[in-house]
Image: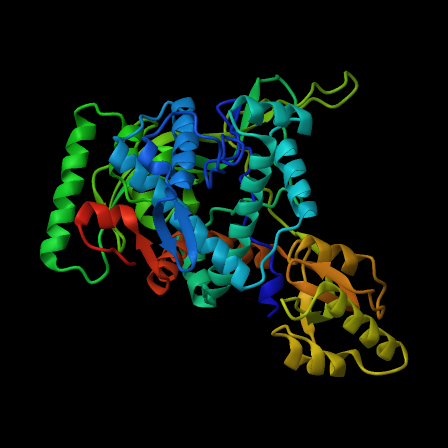
Amino acid sequence: MMSGLRHPAGVLSLALLLGGSALVPPALAAGKTRPAAAPAQQTAPAEQFVDGIAAIVNKQVITLGQLADKQAQVRRQMQQQQIPVPEDAVFKRQVLQQMINAALQDQEAQRTGIRVSDAQVERAIQTVAQRNRLTVEQMKKEILAGGMSWDQYREELRSQIQDDRLRQRFVEDRISISDSDVDAFLQTQGDRPLPPPEQARQPQAPETPEPATVPTGPELVELAQILIEVPDYAANSVVAEKRKQAEAVLRKLQSGADFAGVAAASSNGPQALQGGDMGIRPLKDWPDLFVQAVTDVPAGGITGILQSGRGFHILKVLRRGYAQRPAPKKAPAAAPAAPPATTQPAPAASGPMMVTQTHARHILIKTSKVVSDDKARSTLESLRQRIEHGESFAELAKRYSQDASAPQGGDLGWLNPGETVPAFEQAMNALQDGQVSEPVKSPFGWHLIQVEGRRTKNMEQEFRRMQARRELMQRRIGPAYEDWLDQLRSEAYVDNRLEHTRSGVQSSQ
């Protein structure tokens, strides 16, 4: 039901507080995900700049000059982050593979009509600044100090938003989590309450005495990985050889080698040039294999070799702890005495959770190369006039809507707050019962919305199931996204000239 309108799992990384210091989102930390091209700071051999071709991705050419520019920027970022830069041949291959993956995702976004507007980028900038407790001007100074121009940062952020929308369309919406999956997950939780949403409930804050910070929420863990990838359907001899490579890497780490440097030189993971850093998230949101491996590993520790469907992993726990929130202010003298402070995470509240739900219908017209914004809006304005003259919203939805809800007359059922994208929800909330909206634009096209009614319901049990479903989604989305990228590569024409040069034969993936 209305899968295309569900809110993405997370467009931007949150600035969580761990150990009292703010974690800057990856985009703010010198543009980790997709570094934008910058003028080369080091002089490369002259032959690299004679319009040579580094790779061809479908019909897109990546030149040696573009590769050299990207190497210069990534090298600068790695040095700023104190990540050892691999030897030149390995480094060049790693950067080129990053550029190939970015090109494939850009091409897929263009093919499917995914666009990120300047207004969306501006909203994302405001969000990142607020989450890092900075003004936009302060954040801009941080970006410039890190060696990236403001225009480059904006394009990096645009790429992150685009990739998030790609992930939602092609990965999240295709992951099936059944009711029996949710039942089984809840049984494993026993009586432990799931954390409440920030907007619905806040942990009960102690008032006196005043600690510097108060731990709250789930345990957070930041992980880095080294991945030795094993090809699909590899022969036993290939698997054995890859395990030997992983064992050699582990011995190197155990003898004191720098994890980030080894990851940059040896890992096949997409985060190799960031020292293998996969970011921070609640412990329970990592894949089950990782959760089991790092449960008793302290910060700074590494695991043994883990085997998954992708190959062999070695993990390092970079940081772990609880989010921090500022200590509450002292209660006024006339206020009742507060309970003593505790250094343990505050328990989740229990009991009724009353939520106002909205029963709505919609008609969706998607935009594409053929259907412009103006045409989609004009179509909906015409349909709205027909509804005002007595035609049935449901019947018109069946005939014209391009959403999966069309056969049901556009009926979306009872919607909870936060269950649709913000543009849709804001327009829906402004309507009275029975009222039809003006055309509304969302990331998925243009909508007419009709509100059928509203009700208040105790959502305690539904919320537990929703949170369980979200946790299961977080555990499955990483592997599913990597599988989708593998599929993109397998269906594309990729002529990697560096691999051609190294092996003496043309390499196509």
